[in-house]
Length: 487
Ligand code: BG6
Image (cartoon, rainbow, N blue to C red):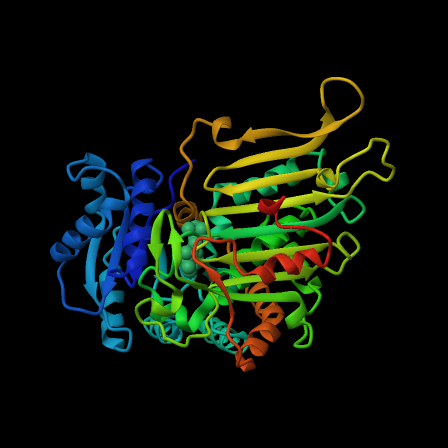
């Protein structure tokens, strides 16, 4: 890959958790691989007084541990030379004018990336102040971190405000799942091979399961999580984006809008879940005390900054349907949860049974044709099918073919943030959400949010370290199927 063009990466929220854990380590990896232009600067912003020297100390303590390099690593030392710290209060226009002055001293023309790793309530103010200082010209790009809004109306409002100052092609809405190597591999597998396409439709597929499970709890983010919950935090964005990747039609090209047009069609084709449907097609759960990773884990309501009678969901499962010719009638079961038995993200494509059973087959072997795409922690594809058991008679057994995608390439896997940051600097929009996609996703989840908010009953409890409440299994059993781990 050629290096990026020259750039200034302006990091709003430069002292925050995301900057330290993800953004700076990702930029470092890109720097170490010589993918960043030598004339690329990182301008970290923070509200408190500070100097570049004190900021670098913080980077040393909080960001370097995520890079796994020693302090004297030459690449790390040269990376630090790119970084400057500026004090900026988002409410203070004069601070933005000073920032614009500091950027103007660049020796060469460059793209300016304004990464808004801040609370979303600051987005509109930051964008209007940037514009007031002329920092919305054609070479400026603005990166917005999720959550983009709290519901349809607030997301529309943020998008409209940001849109007053920046053209849509300058706006990069991050969903870091789209930057994962394994998620892009989904596109490669679907559209780079002729093998799967004929089977990828309602005639041959019985149902699809998409799971993102985490063994961690809310990890000190109780205050944020109380206002968010699993539906907003994971389903509205990551899970729906994965659903789009599975269900979309082949795009006409890899042009950003060709891909985004196809994803949008899927989101628009999702059958609405009306408020009356919510009890039947959704499950909301909340973890109780249990054990995770072999250690006792407290319940969600006992986590710091969580109300003792909180009704925020830490688990959600939904039965969705894509109402178009390819998918009509095929259930897509989506689920995500905190404090589940393990960290995994997986897509299971379950094929129909053969039209005529020639062989006697135990119940357990029905629906045995499955393609399991493991996105993390491993990247693996396995195809499950039936073959003959050795010996007398015609007895079948389940067997599988597995491909470890990691072993197919010796090259280092770029982290999702690294890839996405490089794409922003290079001006590639394909892995970012367009405004209409976001709106369509919010529109679809809105009735679920509203119904849950007006429902005074508690979410269904599940013990930490399990696969969610019993109602989650019941959601599938109504279609005569089971979650993958229950098979
Ligand atoms: C984030 C959510 O978007 O994704 C977190 O806000 C969640 O709550 C995280 O833990 C999961 O991402 P990953 O890449 O670790 O699966």
